[in-house]
Length: 101
Image (cartoon, rainbow, N blue to C red; front, side, top):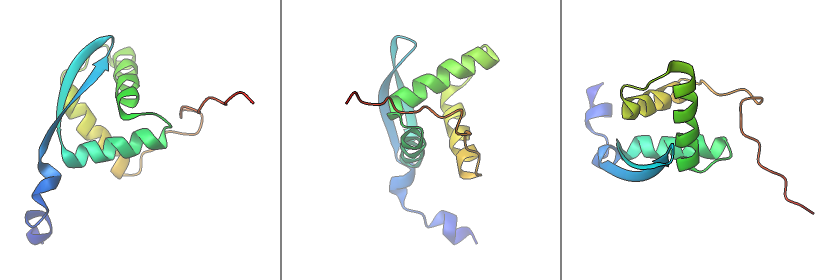
């Protein structure tokens, strides 16, 4: 059983820093490569870039909870919720703007 986890590719847990603008401020977020790949996938499914998705997530979490004690941990648990099948309803997804004809 542990071979599945212990034998995983080390590239998946390599730390990656990305600079993102949140609430008008540039910040650096460090996550493992696997979490960045999942956040990229979630953002794409929402019709957003990853930085825009993370910024919107931050804004909504502040609105709902008032504070985020550990944003990197919140991003990791967002990925866990996604993997467990939690998806926003169609009314919650950001719809792409229509291009003018």
